[in-house]
Image (cartoon, rainbow over all chains, first blue to last red):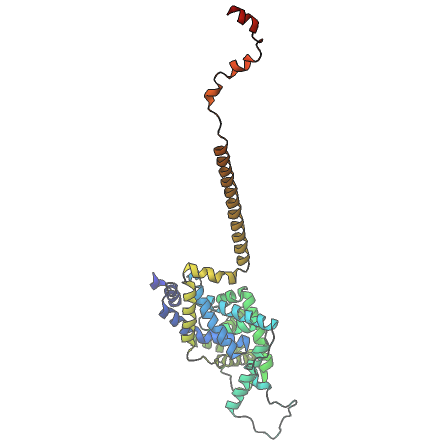
Length: 202
Length: 167
C-alpha cells in the first residue's frame, strides 16, 4: 500500500507507528524551508529556531491526526504559519525588543545620505549584497499573507491549490495576493531589478 | 484576449518555477511580436531570480537532534502511565482541584453522618437491653385467671352469720 503513497506520506505513516528514523528524515528534509518561512515572518533567528522546533514537535504530537489525503508539505506549512502567527500575536501582546532582531540596514546609517557624484558604480557583488538587504526589507514590509504566498510560491513542489490551503483562501485570491505582493516588490526594487544584473529574461 | 491568457499562464508558471526550454521558446516568439512587453518580462524574471537567491536562514547543525529530543520528551509525556497523567491534569484543568476537594468534603460528610446515625442506633439498642434486664415482666401464666379474679370484686359479700348457723 505504502508503495502508492508519496514519500512524505509514507514517512508520516511510519512516524505514526512511532518510528524515530522516519521523523528524523522528515525533519532533515523540511527544516530549511520551514526555518526560512518562519524566519521571514518573525525576523528573529533565535525565535525562528524555537518556533521551527515547535513546528516539528507539533507534527510529531499530531501524527495520529494526519490523514494521507492531505499533502504533508501543505499540512506542515500550515502548522508553521499558524505557530509563527501565534508568536507574532504573543509578541504584540507582550512587546519587547529582542537582541537578535537588529536590522542591519538601519544600523550605523547617517540620518540623511547624499549621492557621491564621483563614485564609480559598485561592483556586482556589492550590488547583490545591497539588493539582498533591500529585498529582505521590502519582503518584511509586505502584508503577512502576501509575503507568505510569495515565499511558498517559490517553494518546490507547491501548487497554487496547496498554497491556497495553507493560507486558508481560494486559489484566485492566492494568485491575487502573489500578484499584488510582487507588484509592490517590483515597484520598490525597480532601480535594482532594471540594472540588468539580475535579468535573465528570454 | 487569447494572447493575454497565454501571457498570464506564462507569468503564473514563472512565479512558481523556471520555464521549460519549450515554454521559453514559445515566450520568446511571443515577445518578438510584442516588444512593448519585453521590459515587464525582464523585471518579472529579475524578481524571480532575486527571490530564488535570497539567502537561507542559518540552520543550526544540531537542529534535527534537538527536534528529535523534543519529540522524545513529548513521547515520554504521552506514554506516561495513567496515574501520572492525573498529576499533570490539574495544571490543564484548573477547576479539577476544587471539584476534587468538594467531592472529598461531601463524601466525608456523608460518611460521618452515617457513622453518627449508626452510633445513635447502637446506643439506643444498648439502652433498651439494659432496661429489659432490670424490669423483667411476670410470666403470662399469672394472668390465666385474671378475668375471674377481677369479677370477684364485683360479687356481693358473703353472709358470715348464715355460714356460722349452717355449721
